[in-house]
Image (cartoon, rainbow, N blue to C red; front, side, top):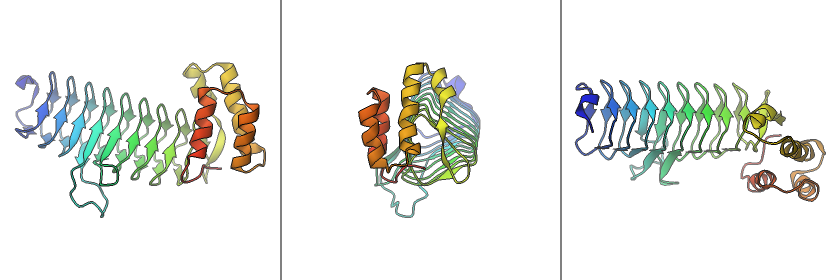
Length: 259
């Protein structure tokens, strides 16, 4: 750790473990039982609290608070962590709480952009390559799969899951699961077609996009219940990892999917 990159106005607990080539701005607080990897830029007025684990190559902007105790009255001070992967951009005033006895850790993967004012509650699991818009709030034990795009001011109920490659309209709130590859929007939130632009940008073939589209036509527009619709998908849509992902996501949904 090059002391020249650490502001003399920052506080770093002597037991904190800091990697190589880490910049720390003034008035930043780094607690004990914190591990920070290499090549991170931690700007001014950041709080990285007990139990935080931060990988390599992250940018953390002023006012962010990582590893604060959960906003959960069941929390009794148990040893838990808030774990952040590599190459994330964590903008101003983002809050990422550590876990509870439920799962023991809150996880944010790699290559994510968390915009200003995002809240990640206890025991949440955010995958890789996600974009989460300003002031979006995620409750406890939510799951967001890889490459999801969640717009600004979205409210996500506890225990919900968001599938990969989705686009969620700004200002939405939801308490059911949002299956992969779709656009979710309107008020109340509803299936609004597949995320065709996003899938093309990610290199999905026209044939695969058509198969995904046909699967969701059956699920949402056939008039069948979910179980019957999934059976029809299995029989009529050519199998692929993406189609299997849709089927398993919906079959394993604990809260049911948005309609």
